Amino acid sequence: MMKILDTMMVLLFPFLDTIPFTLPRYWMFRDRLRMPFRYIILLQLLLSAANSMVFYYINLKGNEYAEQWTTVTRYSFMLLFLALAFLLIRESFPKLMFTYLLFLAWLFFVLGNANYIESRFFIDFSVRHPYLIYNIARILIYLVSCPFMFHFFSHTISDALKINDKKIWQNFWKIPLFSTLFGMLYCTVTDVYAYASWQFLFSRYLMLFGVCYVSYVVLNTLKISRYSAQLEDALKYADRNLESQRKQCDRLTSHMEEIRRARHDLRQHLAVVQCYIDRNDREGLADYIDIYKNELPPDTLELYCRNNVVDAVVCYYATLARDAKIQFEAAVNYPDNCSVTSTDITVLLGNLLENAVEACIRGTEKQKFIKLCIKQRNKSTLLILVDNTCKTPVIFHEGIPMSSKREGFGIGTASVQSIAARYGGDVQFEQKEGVFCASVFLKISSDM
Image (tube, rainbow, N blue to C red; front, side, top):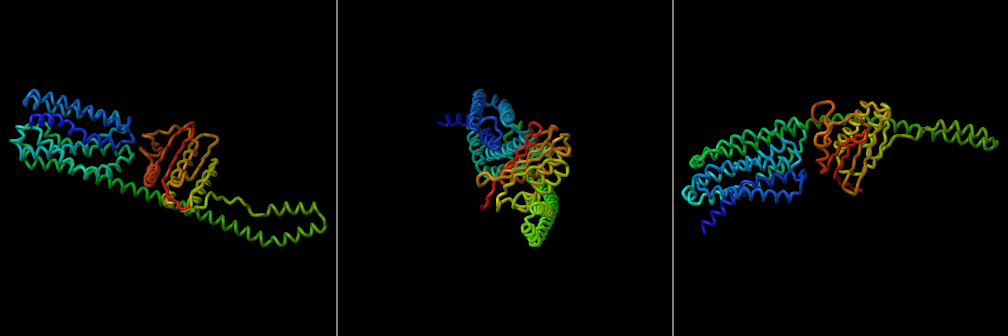
């Protein structure tokens, strides 16, 4: 009976090395996989089964042979699983390595605790049944640490992966690298008593919690930095918004004054008209009506929607565009009582329209245009579409346009992405046939 159990433990050993740590990593990138997740599971199981067969064969050759080749086999398959991840996940090298090294640190933590328990308390039993205690300890430690690590990956690391700054990731992925290299110092140690020391166990705790804490601190620092940049952005557009609203208010006041004066003068004009009618002077009446029409106040006050904030932003950039001889068209159907805050819609629209105006001004096209469309789709989605002429090729990285003013992504683009993510939405950029298209959708709630 124990012999069958020992055989099962040998076969289970490679599965515990891979499956608990690879599948959650693929799940984190489930929207960027090159094949359905169910096929990923099947492929991981097949590779782990192959690993298990090789490991079983090594152990059939005896303890000396197993001791010599176990570490080589484990790390060879580990590299194979890593290479496969690069093939199956459409993501940049730094992001893939960052998550891989974090999961590797977690793996070393589980292995280190299992090694300590086995070497410290069950050394004699483990000589007779080499993998039984070790496997049981690994399963228990994995289950205990799972809730904490899953919370860390689903919140802190998921937020980190949303950052699309190439320069940041060139350095960010190295944070877990050095801790993992430190953990690999014990890879070639064959003395079981070395695993029974408190120094070994403490090093595993330092490695895992150290890398998690540093990643958490760095991410929070980046969040604060980006939030400050977004606040500056918001203040800039708020100033423009206030100025635009002031001008709009001045135009409206002037328009109302002209209407009031026209109504006041209407009695005199009607008296003159009555005189022409009494004299049956049709020609004189026609001439007088032409003169009177020219004195009427204009009825072309610019008004794009009922929301004052959105209307002010659109009016501001419409004026900038027309001053620069850019054709500006806007179809704005902004819902009443929309859940998007005034600050967010100001920054989002301001960034999109400012980029469109600047792109048109830099362009050499004879006919330049900007087309804005804001509409509600269903009851829970707000669409914002901005198209503008742009024949200059735009460099994209992972679907995001690179800044023409600085290296990497633009602050404005990052603000738009951040706002879209805050409302559970998305942003898409593309360039086709000399037109740059920006599409934003936000999940909203509105009381219609």
